[in-house]
Length: 485
Image 1: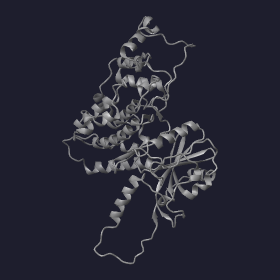
Image 2: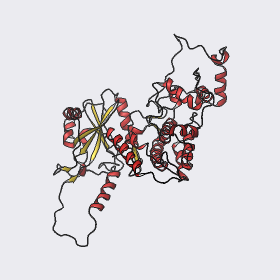
Image 3: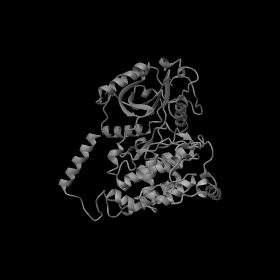
Image 4: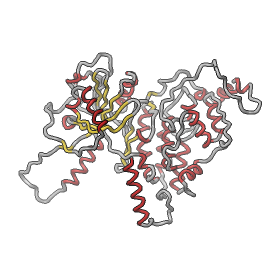
């Protein structure tokens, strides 16, 4: 992009790899913007594209105009359509790729499949071939997602995200990086645009078979990510764009991702053998000086001990217990806990399932499920002490089957739901060493030997369809919810 040349030296700039646009195999490289994207035709695209204009708020239009004004030359490559996401560290825009036909687009698997299916539907084979007709018309619009990373993000964080996406190119169900460019301190990553359905609409209507497709695609992505020793750290429904028609999803947003072991300061107690942990706990001050009434009177107001620091990146309600206990030896298993929370949301029909304000409330929510005994054991594994005097929190906790029945307001679970609950127990294990990995989860009976005994939420296998009046009311309620979102 000639308009963007002359970027300051020392800032990371990533060009598309051989998996995407036009480079020769085996020549992945980091280069300056002067190299540009290798086009198959240097001429500008002829004609207008065909797509329906979306309704855009005036504030969004001003935001997009501001981006075009601060990024010279971006309007020659992309036509901004709408703002589709906004987070703490970035904003994502839907844009039309004006030069799509000038490049090799191996990354656009879903788009090419949809185009082929649409062409077969629109142009069925005919007995008589028309001769002399001109097929030139408006070209089909191709959309991408432009992720503008805020300047408040550190350059190391931006470089880390782009490098990880570059390393994960070609991985199934992982959002590929098309290219990235910058102008002064502005950085934009170009990613594929994936049509998907809002999770807040899907989770109430998902059957167990739908949950199986959703989780298989998500765990396939995580298996590839974890094989590269990468922790995503922010697994949640909004970061997994799922298309129920294709039964495929794409994992996005690697802004908090990191390589396993890169944040280790000192090994956590959980990384040692059991006898080492036991001796450490028995030699601690708390064990040698237990409180008289069984509960400590609190903690020092001016504690002189050094604070324990660990990476706590993630979203409230999806953080694993080892993250809450400030484990310094976190592994890829923290992502699997978050997958378990998503499965619990689908089975329990509640979103968000955990709604804590801080880490203390999050641990209280966990203890109300697992009980104080298991929470104390989990805390001791990381060299921490868990205590609570809340009388409603029992010592033993509850089973996942009972919790799912309470949450979804049903008397009994179907056989397929019981099978999914067994997978849930393996994912939401307090001990990360016993928690299922992505590969182990994909080999679970829920995927390898599924039980097809599925009913709609609130229904019964022996019951037939409901009355037409009830169907109309349900359709109206769903339409109202879609309109509200």
